[in-house]
Image (cartoon, rainbow, N blue to C red; front, top):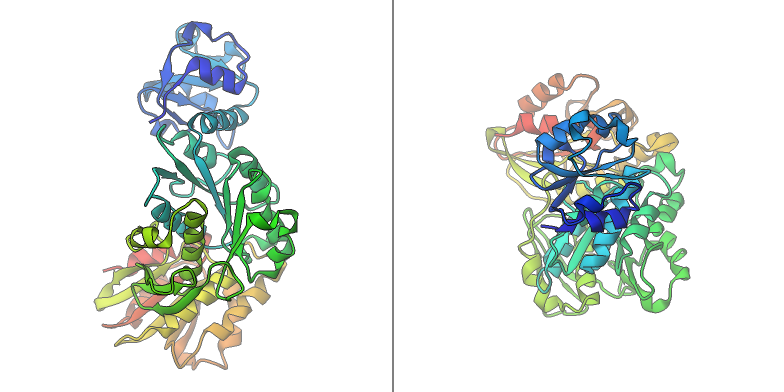
Length: 462
């Protein structure tokens, strides 16, 4: 729980009005959502689809003790004009970010920033496990990884926090720069360069440029941890000193690489070049998660934690919900839910792993549209073709307008009784998939969140 006085807040945000009469009043939480306010909160009315200023009375009713305010003080409701503490600013969003900077300086933890086209949240969860073996850690919750969520994450940080892990997301150029300049990471991690949001960047090179913005606020001797086998990053890290660069990946050219990977349905194990005699166990499937774990282990090593110390914690880490999770399906089947996000690189990786599993029934994949791929959408959807092998996957069910190109390409590869295509309402898709599922079957569902295959997942659960 935080503790800040009105005097501290007013100083941090550059208050326009005189707040001296409330100087010693304390707040213990900060939020922009009136539904999440508790007693003693600072309310931050943001301008968006709705103007947060219009909800000031509801904020007070729900526990707000103080509010930021970017309108004229005469616009306050009459009942609040004299007695309710208001800190007037020019821009409430900037004030929120400035307050987060102030509080970050006050707590003074080590800062780990994480970005990447895929694997950000999983790597965040793994890094939390690794670092908590030695430090008191606070991390981004849910998807609070943008210009609003990141400062809220910082302001939710307990005063005794020693390391804060901040996930940094983006959909446009310049967004990660804002987050990095605010957070000033001691350690920055780029998980991978994929195709997410390529519609807005034109190419993977453009995405690499945007991800490298995480170095904008990197402290003078801060460390960048990145996949060493990504040429687009190798070309871009030359602005940093060699001592600031740490790489991970499958090749022995990297600072940290895996040995003897063993991928099972519910766990993945490997050793590393740093400790060939020590088996690291992950309670999740997928060889692609080994890279995420290597990045987390490297973050620990950078902050003085040995693999020997962190590996036991990594074996117990909790994955954020909807990230590649096994669920019980109808008719005694097993569902692999990975319908939270998708890009071609990630989709191919999970298909390759899913295809390798052994089960008593069929393997069925339900793939939905991957969004924000722009002019390259058809080409990138088509690229998934080589990861769909009819000798290892019995049935392929595709959903969404963008998946039509993949459907057409697979017609000569899969028999027509094993290849299906749906668009529009999801109920026909749900009913069809239900009829296909038998005891012992494995069903993978993968798509971008906006395609909403999560609703199909829920319908197929036992």
